[in-house]
Amino acid sequence: MNNSVQLVLRQIPSVNKILQDSVMKSIIADYGEKLVKISINSVLGEIKSNILNGLVDNIPNYDDIVNQIKVEVNSKALPSLRKVINGTGIILHTNLGRASLPENVLNQMQRIASGYSNLEFDLETGKRGSRYAHVAGLISKITGAEDAVVVNNNAAAVMLVLSTLASKGDVVISRGELVEIGGSFRVPEIITSTGGNLVEVGTTNKTHLNDYAEKINEETTALLKVHTSNYKVIGFTEGVSTQELHQLAKENNLPLIVDLGSGLLVDLSKYINYKEPTVQEMVKNSDIVTFSGDKLLGGPQIGVIAGKKKYIDKIKKNQLLRALRVDKLTLSSLEIILREYYLKDEKELLASIPVLKKLTESSDNLEQKAKDLLIILKANNKLNLKIIEDYSKVGGGSLPGLELPTYLVAIKAEGISVNKLESRLRKIDIPIIGRTIKDYFCLDLRTIEENEYEIIKDGLCRIISN
Ligand SMILES: *Cc1c(COP(=O)(O)O)cnc(C)c1O
Image (cartoon, rainbow, N blue to C red):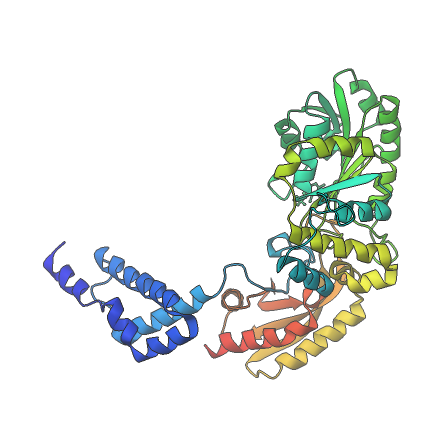
């Protein structure tokens, strides 16, 4: 290191000196000394490394250093996982956390989280109980399944089922169903990773019952049907119905396993133009069904395994279940959601489960919401605003191709490009995520709650006055 660099480094103020600064003292009063010290060290460390790497010749002036520390404290004071406003209109946005939960679920989670509970304690006998007992009965009553267990997510559910029932032989599946879901879940890899031998039948667009029948032999352990929930094969296509496949499985004394994915528990065909099989239909026509909790079911992230008791009993004995088990918070929220499905009628459900509400929200309602948000945002005269009609998507690998008519508030900010606007809105305390259409930043009202309008207004005000 040469002398001039050493001289510059010596000018960096000491941590102690900065801590004595009156501005710092008031920040310490708000945020605590530890966070402020961490932030000072990180800012000073960066200044030092910039000088050592020859990126700058001099240290910033003292006021700039203090300002940088303030910014650092502010950003470090926020947790990494935070609330965001979802203005994309994608209801089950996997990157934004999929399903949002109803209020009564949150109250129950808080009660269970803040104290002890009868998680694995049977209050009748005073002996050890099962954590699955809190939800298995409800799942059976709602879906008609003989029994059920739940695990971390549907990927885990499929792995557990295959590793229990089909790890030592052939698993027969249609080539049209060897799908990838969400990048990290590929059906062929899942089958082979659990020890099963993948036997593909049919072609990408057509599979006949005979194709399955021809491949069944002494080595076969299960027939697998994967609901192609995140894409559609259209045109010259043919698949085998679950009923037919179930009949074939029965004749050969094999289980039919269905990976349903989306977990729809109420028939929505009256409300949306899409035919999605319900869990109840699949339970009737198969031996084991697996599905997610945080897709169309509208609950927490879990995977449900429901079906015939003789198979569920085997699954319960698999050691892997222990590694995939769900925690008390998840179970507490799942139970409340399931109670809604069990105790409420269809109309009430569409109002109380946020995912179902968003899926079936009328475009009249959405238009009114867009008008309400527009009025609130109009208070800021640097915004150029308009309402446009568009379509929302379901997302989360569910109901592919379905487009729900919706209304957006389109925003342009004076002197700020749409890309800048989008990027600044991502970097505020409660980030606002939307869609960019031409040179407008757009917010789809389908995924925005009324109590978020003011947050959006404040967010926009902040980045525009900056
Ligand atoms: C979404 C999906 C999965 C993965 O479920 P996760 O709950 O996200 O783990 C598996 N199979 C199908 C058919 C799906 O749609």
